[in-house]
Length: 367
Image (cartoon, rainbow, N blue to C red):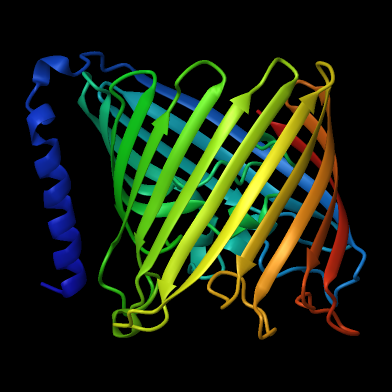
């Protein structure tokens, strides 16, 4: 048996073993076999203008959403079906657009269009214990690839450089409305097909807590690598955030990402990166909302944000957006963003620059 098969076989046995005590409680499983399917989707078109006027149509390679310059483009076109039958559930979602082109660049052929494809079984109704496997939404972060889910139009640098999806297995446990726990085993950092030459899985955890209405706290981790076995560098990553509905009009999100990665295989030296973020949104009335985002992203050695400057990437970003709901499901958004770095890290045709200002407008329909 190949080494990769051994790892995944061992992982499956591990998941089944930790699930065995609850799997035997057959009387806790639902008995209804009625099939239910829900179809949903989103279409998100945008126009963006980068005042640094990049060469070509793509700007800022560390972004994978709303990153086209001076053209109308489809960021995300998505169709999804969510299915349930008895103790089973499944999700299949296909997508196209600039997001799929950029964020799935390493995936072959048709896999570039797989947004989600997973199946799950309820192991115990008591505690709401599920085992899910396939291409899953990432347990890391508070921003979705679906722009209408987020307080801001564009994604933060933090979100753009953490996984939007993972491929593997997950056991989740929700003992009460306040607490949620999960453990995951998956391919590397945002992969459907693993890195060539990699045979070992990565691991993750998630703990969520709702102490009261309007307060949500989350801590997610990644432990593993995104390298082939021959050069495998360990990566440890932590994502911590809180979401607070202060009142009917004001929502606040505060978060921090921190990660370290070995400088080389077997080394005791690690390179860090981190990013704090604050987002505030005001709801002016039933149709109009606006938000302000302030973040800082520091990656001195180019673990996540590659650039040619010897000091790496250390950038403060500020954005302001206004949202207007034209009618149910149809959202028009406008956002202004400015990036400022200590160094000239933004590469453009004439010369590098330390600032980057751009405007984005989006029209998204969700059904």
